[in-house]
Length: 299
Ligand SMILES: *[C@@H]1O[C@H](CO)[C@@H](O)[C@H](O)[C@H]1NC(C)=O
Ligand SMILES: *[C@@H]1O[C@H](CO)[C@@H](O)[C@H](O)[C@H]1NC(C)=O
Ligand SMILES: *[C@@H]1O[C@H](CO)[C@@H](O)[C@H](O)[C@H]1NC(C)=O
Image (cartoon, rainbow, N blue to C red; front, side, top):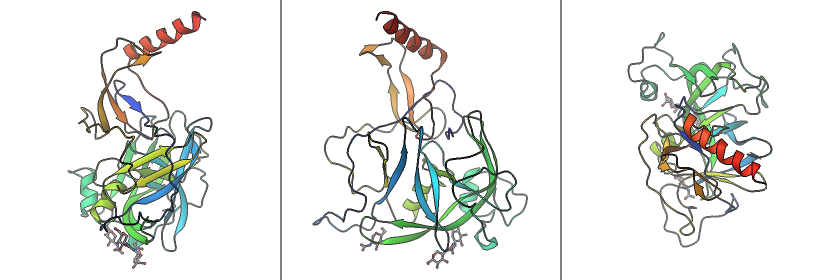
């Protein structure tokens, strides 16, 4: 699933790979570190960018908590699960569909509902409908639900956070989508207030810091919070505002191939862990293809 919001082709989706720094997720808090009111939640990533082509985290949701595999998407804001509400069009997924109860439905007047679209009109005041369209034309339609997410924190405590997400009872697959999905839903970690990261920050559980690391052997880990961010061997760049959408962006990027600039004017780069492909506009695409062709024909 390509899980970015629609973005024009002028954007280059960049996957940041921090290799091969991989602390053990269950490591105890660093001794001597001053106590802080927020901690770090660490999750294992299963799968691999290559050759499998996808990876996911396992989240435990509900009462009692049940496991769900979720795609990690820094390019969108609303998390959702394939949901039996009842289901109108759901994919075959690894676990049974999430089954909501009436008391978990988020009402239209809730602030997170309003934040989805400021001038939202709800058909029924008791519920908040949503619809999302992704770059690959996949869609998810459903209602907002709030339920407990069970998170293991690095300070050795387990918290149950009441978080808002989408109960998606109608999913249409995109161009490259399969009816059999590898995950039960999507973990959206964008900058918007409904994103899981923003809700955890709002509730004082973790800070607005996100780490996403892959091992060269497949797998890796994801963390929310700042107390395992390494102090050295990391290059920091300020976050830039994007001209389109609410993406994480380190600003402009210049294309190089074989250490030579391709002479394409710098492009806005976004960090979107949910897109499978790197997209180019026509001109940088042509420049890249020509450079690869030239290299290939000179062998
Ligand atoms: C760990 O952090 C959480 C969330 O910030 C906090 O509520 C909890 O009290 C902390 N637990 C310990 C053992 O410090
Ligand atoms: C979440 O868990 C807490 C503590 O176990 C419980 O009191 C609360 O009702 C649960 N919330 C939901 C939405 O299920
Ligand atoms: C969980 O959060 C939602 C949305 O903020 C709220 O409507 C609901 O009452 C909360 N549930 C519990 C059990 O605290």
